[in-house]
Image (cartoon, rainbow, N blue to C red; front, side, top):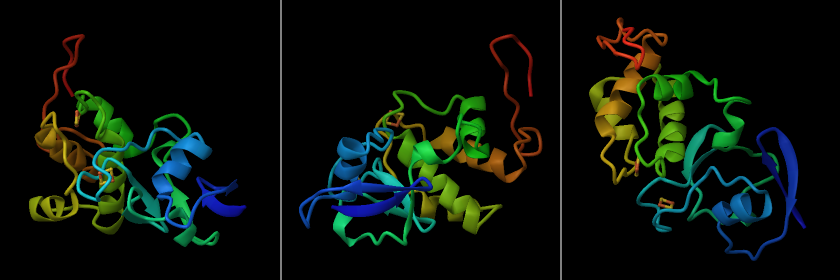
Length: 167
Ligand code: FES
Ligand code: FES
C-alpha cells in the first residue's frame, strides 16, 4: 500500500511502479472528473495539480508522487463548482461536449495563480490543452473574465443570457 495526498485527504492505493497517476485517481480513488484523452501527454485532458503545478497525470507514475505532495483534481477545486474559474466557464457556456474541460479548467486555474491578469501570449503559452470541439475562443474569454474579477463588462464582453438579460 502507498499513500497519496489528494484533495486534502490521505488516500491509500496499490499499483505497479509504472501505473499512471490518472488510473489510480480514476479507478482506485473514484475521481473520474479527470479524463483520459491521448495517454501520451499531448492533449491535457488528464491535467491535475501537484503542489500547484499543472501535471499530465497520464504519464506520471503514481508511485513517483510523494505523500507530502498535494494533488488537486477538478473535484477538489471547490465543493460545489463555485471556484471563480468554474463560474466563468458556466457564465460563458464554455464547454461543448465537455470532455476536455476538466483539464482546461485545471490548466487555467494554474495559469491565473501565477499570472492573475494574463496576456494573450501568456494564455497561448499556458493553455496547450487540446479541445476537439474548438472551444478555444470561449476559454480565452473566460480566463479574461476571471482576470477582471468575474466582471464580463470589465473584460470587454457582453453576454446575452437565455432570459434575455445581459451582463
Ligand atoms: S490523456 Fe494525458 S495528456 Fe492526453
Ligand atoms: S468541449 Fe469537446 S473536446 Fe473540448
